[in-house]
Amino acid sequence: MQHQPPAKNPYTPAPAINASQWINSERKNISAMRGKVIVLSFFQMLCPGCAAHSIPQSKKIHELYRSQDVQLIGIHSVFEHHDVMTPAALKVFAHEYKLKYPIAIDRASPHGVVPCTMSAYDIQGTPSLVLIDRKGHVRYSYFGMLEDMLLGSMIGQLLAES
Image (cartoon, rainbow, N blue to C red; front, side, top):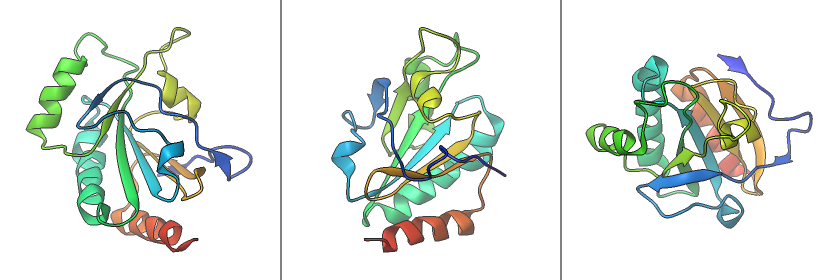
């Protein structure tokens, strides 16, 4: 597990999600979700750590916290194997894995291989998690796998804040 500070100031306003398409949802706007704790789960279909850990963890977060003020959003950020990780393939993947939460397909960058939202959040790879507080500030950013208990306590801390 590698902690990645989101910025020099831990209360940086969360950047917008720049998606080319959405699965399981209409467009989600970070600023419109103020008052909720937001969990962004950056993943790729062909990422072994994502398939083994972060996708099942995201499903648990969605199930456990959806009746509370927590919004989980999957961010499918393709920075390699573009020819096989198409929106159509992701829709099949989401259906097969029974992913019911909103999934944003990160918009390809015109300036390089790192997609727009992944770049805006300074994500180093997949899987990665970003936690945004009720006021819309990025509070935590992690590259790698985070233990379920630790993640649950972090979400609980953010829920307890006014």
